[in-house]
Image 1 (spheres, rainbow, N blue to C red):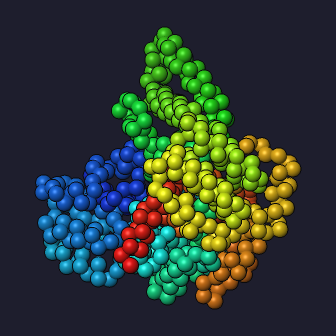
Image 2: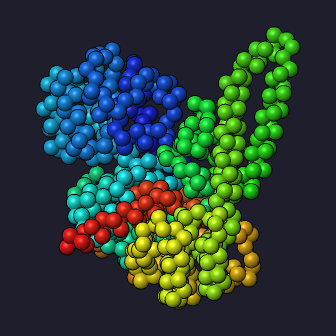
Image 3: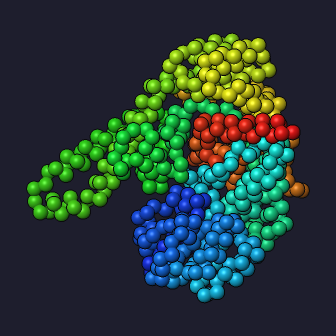
Amino acid sequence: MVLITAVRDYINRMLQDISGMKVLILDSHTVSIVSVVYSQSDLLQKEVFLVELVDSISMSKEPMSHLKAIYFLRPISENIQLMRRQLATPRFGEYHLFFSNMLRDTQLHNLADSDEREVVQQVQEFYADFVAVDPYHFSLNVASNHMYMLPAVVDPSGLQHFCERVVDGIAAIFLALKRRPVIRYSRASDIAKRIAQEAAKLMYQQESGLFDFRRTEVSPLLLIVDRRDDPVTPLLNQWTYQAMLHELMGIRDNKVDLRNIGKFSKEQQEVVLSSEQDAFFKANMYENFGDIGMNIKKMVDDFQQVAKSNQNIQTIEDMAKFVDNYPEYRKMHGNVSKHVTLVTEMSKIVEERKLMLVSQTEQELACNGGQGAAFEAVTNLLNNESVSDVDRLRLVMLYALRYEKDSPVQLMQLFNKLASRSPKYKPGLVQFLLKQAGVDKRAGDLFGNRDFMNIARNMARGLKGVENVYTQHQPLVFQTMESIVKGRLRDVDYPYVGNHFQQPRPQEVVIFIVGGTTYEEARSVAIQNSTNSGIRFILGGSAVLNSKRFLKDLEEAQRIARTSASVV
């Protein structure tokens, strides 16, 4: 609950202390922050009758002095400029300004200078500068997420902008939690080190007073890692409900857009998936695909029972009861049809792309040895006409990440076959991935074959057999959390920033993945938190990835790297 509650509390404080009819004005970032934790009916209950974007409200000149304007914006220069213009010719009766992060003094002076009519009632900082996707999972929704793959010399200002956004988001998390962390980072990653150092500088030097919460318990741990330490997880097909929906259809700010998938009624073109507002989704978001089908059947049966009892209206009392229960009945109907639609569409995609076949080989590549068998399986799938281009690319990438040092000749054969079977993929994308996230670049033990403990664990798992061949993979984050719980996260791999070191075991750990998280990793965190190990984990990242987004970032970084190389 922690993250969603923190953001909801901030928004409640914004809205409930101001009485009367209100307009809520957001920017392209804060609209995501608000929409994942607050529904439209919640806003109406707080007398918010209009929600507008700050740049579009600038176009309109119509006075609305009967409304009180509540602005919730990121404190970036474009927003400050828009605010100054709007305060120069005010349209609303009152202005209440809330910013999602720290305002600079100069920005505050500029706003004060523009408020000649004295319509601004208050200016406050409410530290909700992150999208609380789930109770223990947040994203910063960074548009230029590919920046983390580029060396600093390629686009210094772009990289600086990326780092500043990440540091702002991390600072907001800890200000919302009212804690100041001890910071560690992945040794192999320049960008993780840079962000760790900039975050430490902000929290311990520039804004030391703001982060001084005078708390006596053990400091939380902030661990900053790089997506390239585990490039396998975002490349895999997923088989648990939330992760699978994002992989096959895409979830953005807890919404699934069905417009491109088929013809649906207007209210079903975009469906909301929130563990806070949808009990079925909350209970099933981490369940695997086979169980979801059974659970949806049970939900449909329950609904049919309710529908049947509603048909049996004979007296005035029955009618009154039906009217009282109708909103709940309608909500239940909407929920049933939403989940039936989603699972039906996913089943079609699985069948169309032969994903059960593809995924079995993916899981084998990610979890088990046996290079000869892997080569044969990937070759057969590359030759299979039913396998899509993107699935062929992902299979070759997974094979390359696993066996880049073992079989260069066979790897070359797969590159050539991929180029002939799926020519739409730019040559060199797999090689670029290896350059970015190959074995020499990664920290940690991705395939469990460097460290003796991991080798022993893999052997034991092989002997025991796996419960489900499609969900046997565990992301690197799982191992990392295990190491933290056991107090075995090595300083040499994850050094501390400054002269800090962790004294007793932390009770709260925020793991931030530069380059983005996946829902598979969020599931690992939720499962770990349910074990009551005495440590609460929170997962965050610059974006929420599926394989499509990960490959898009990779292609964009490759394109920029090529053009900058040709300029040099």
